[in-house]
Amino acid sequence: MPYSHAPLPTTHDSSAHGSASADIRLVVTDMDGTLLDDDKRAPAGLWEVLEQLRERGVLFSPASGRQYATLAREFARAAEGMVFIAENGTYVVRDGVELSSDPLDPAVVTEVVEAVRRLAAGGVDVGAVVCGKRSAYVERTDEPFLAEVRKYYVEHRMVEDVTAVGDDILKVALYDFGPAERTTAPALARFGATHQVVVSGEHWVDLMNRTANKGAAIRRLQRELGITPAQTMVFGDYLNDLEMLDTAEWSFAMANAHPEVIRRARHVAPANTENGVLRTITRVLGLPAAGR
Image (cartoon, rainbow, N blue to C red; front, top):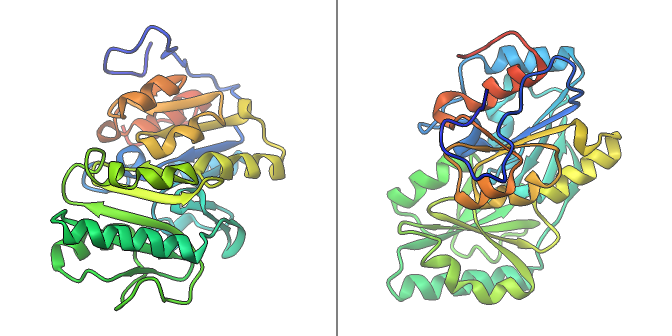
């Protein structure tokens, strides 16, 4: 029985039948558009499933463009021992201890911020979020922009100059009130020769070091814990999840995912609005049904 509720490319195997004997040791999921519903709510049954995974010795890891502080708050009830892959893989933390990070050169941060300032001066409705280890930093102070920032950055500060904050900067995130894939991303294309410019949502573009992505963070974690791709299950929906899909034999695109993500994944799970992550985990691992 297929997981997908939509037609799939013929190159995909969408069957992924449940098996209580599946040897899964690591489950990694994106948040927005994947685990969370369209109102940013955690699915029914999440805490029950997390406890079942813990009892089986399966490590659960959120992997998100969100900052560590935001993820830690979201999972406060089950955070002990959990690995948080934050800021698109540039910052990985377990039990409050940094496992890895990949900060940007301050000169590059300044270049990107200046490019954003020029875009805004030219009429593009865009703002930069400079993402540090301690906090996120913004110059733009209007409420519509700050409302979007608050969704993903619990720790954020308004400053006069985001290029002079005295923090290790992991990522520069741009929020474009228009379609980011068609406006802001092309304007930052020149940085793509040396850095990653990733469209991480309809309105978000992230710039990071070329060496930083969710997939690289997962591979490091797999090496450290002795977990293989065959023992890894991942879920994603957008372009910043592509590298992550390559780390697991059990790779799932959500039915609502970007077309390129669906092409890249081995399987397709039900949409985020249909509790696709938990439904897939419970079926593949043979867990009691939760949140249906």
